[in-house]
Length: 378
Image (cartoon, rainbow, N blue to C red; front, side, top):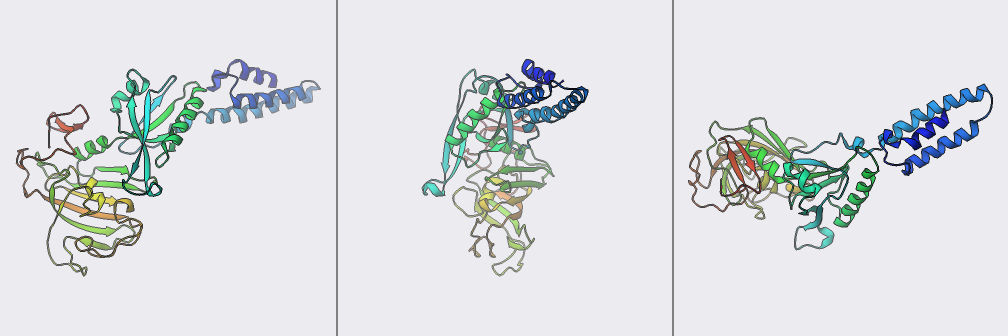
C-alpha cells in the first residue's frame, strides 16, 4: 500500500497540484514513503497491517501539507482595501516593469520612504490583457506579492520577490502569482459616488493601522456641479477629537483656551504642502459638495506625527499628544466664496483642473474616473 502511495506521487503529481516529480516537497515526501516501504516490504501479516496503517497516516499527513503549500490556496482569502485590486498572473512573462519612488524630496535617504510603482506595461502581455478591466497603468502602486506586503521595500528586493514567487507558482497546477495594486482613481470614484453611510478607507503607511478613513455622514439632496479640489478656498465648520479619549482638542467653535465661543467657520486653502490644516484633510475633503458632512479618521502620519504638537496659532487650538489618531467632523459651508449648490460648472470661473479632471458623470448619476476621460472639469 505504501509502495502504491509512492508510485501515485511519482506517476500523477498533477493530482496534488504539482507540475513535476522534481518539486522539492515531492522529492522529500516521496523519499520518506520509499524509505518506509523498503523497511516494511517483507514480514508477516502484522507487518502488512502496520504498513497499511503507516500508509494511511502518511496520506493523511502529506497530502494536506502539499495542498496547503499551494500559493493559490493560501492567498485566496487575502482581504483587499477599498481602493485595491488583485491580478492573478498565470504561465509566461508578466510584461510589467516596476520602478522605485522615494519621498519626501530634499531629505536624507535614510529618512525617506520608498514605494514600488508600475513604470511600463508591455503591449500584448499578461499585464495588459489581465489589467485592462482594472485600468492597470503606469504610476499605480504595487502593494503586495502573494500576500506579502511590499510597501517600504526597495525595488530590487521587490523585483526579486516577484521573480521567486513567479517561479514558485509555476511549479503548481492551477496556481497564480497574485499581485495587489492600489489605485487612487478608485478612491476618487467612491468619494464622488458616496451616499450617507458610505465609508471609504485607504492605506497611507506600511503599518496596517496607518489608514485614512472617510465616513460620509450627510449629503444634501442637490449636490450641484461644483466639488472641492486642490487649490480651492474652503469654508468649513469642524470639531476635532482625540480617537483614544474622545477629548475635543480643536474646532471652529472653540477658542485658544478650549472654551466654546459660538458658531464660527474656518477658511483655508486646500493645497498640499501649505500645512494650513492636517494633511489628512487634503485627501479626505476632496470631492465634497456644499452642505456635505464627513467624519475623517486620520492616522498620525497625516496628522501631527510622532512628536505631536503644542497648540498652534490657528489649528489646532489645544495640544495634540505624540502618535495621536485624530477624528474630525467636518461640514463644508462654501467653496471659493459660493455657499449654495449650483448646476453651473462655470460659476467659479476658471479653475486649474487638478484632482478630478479625469472624472466625468455617467448617465447623470455615477462618476467614473480614468486616463481616458478628458475635457471635463468639475
